[in-house]
Image (tube, rainbow, N blue to C red; front, top):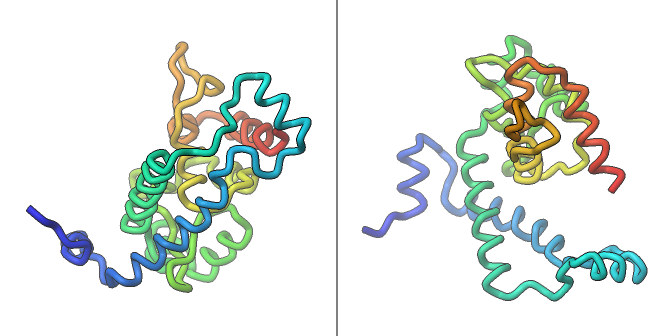
Length: 192
């Protein structure tokens, strides 16, 4: 059975057009494509050190690029489809819309523009509330595109292990654990 993008959008209750979603995904993919060169931005000495350490610096194959781009597009589409408007986020946070926009500017709330309109990813809220401590972590996260932010916060890491089991930053914070540890991890990524 062939499924059309517009049908998927409509079944999810989204008013955005297929053309608009396609344009937004294209923008996201263009940004990601720039990061696919494994050695871009490294000095010759850094490149040599990384090669000596086992990094495969060969260019990605067309199939690898296609697979990565498809994964990014799917994640971005899911994030966009499940995101909240400024008004909806204001209701959840029980604040005025202007406060939501202020927090987006301060980067204490994560959002991205979808055709000039702010969208706030729903993963920041659990049980109708903002994840505790997240507002303290987000300013330390130096990547800003929605897929990278989500991946950083939703990928299990041994740095946040509980009983030897790696958990995600979102799980760590949702359990009420101190945000300082997640901020340290974000800061360490900035230094590398």
